[in-house]
Length: 176
Ligand code: NI
Image (cartoon, rainbow, N blue to C red; front, side, top):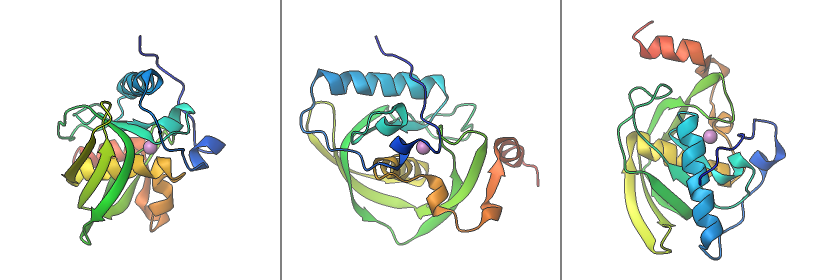
């Protein structure tokens, strides 16, 4: 049974630690991935990384679909990512919204590469090499940052790019 965990909040030291690689994808990693999907789903996340549930390992999940927190998100198959590497990132960047379950109540406009090529292991241990672009690339890089002890706040160029959640939703709604 997957469990829903408390999510570590900004300021907790686990969010600033560099996470440990996974040497063996055993039952405990399968459980961890189930717990990550359940916890992200409960919180309407687009993804969540293991350090956010206080497990400092190089694992995250992508759970990208339209939700109350990301009404305009595309849909991607649920993806477990273990020991990821960013092989290539486009020079072209786009400044768009980031948000984080560990930093509730605010959103920020953060520049990130529009396209990335990555390698990671799936739950079967096989290496996958693939490309992501747009929102999926943004979420992948955001979750990967968590494994390096970083958050989206570390990429903000100007304090004016940070807004409250309520204001973010108002702007998405077409408000000026
Ligand atoms: Ni996050």
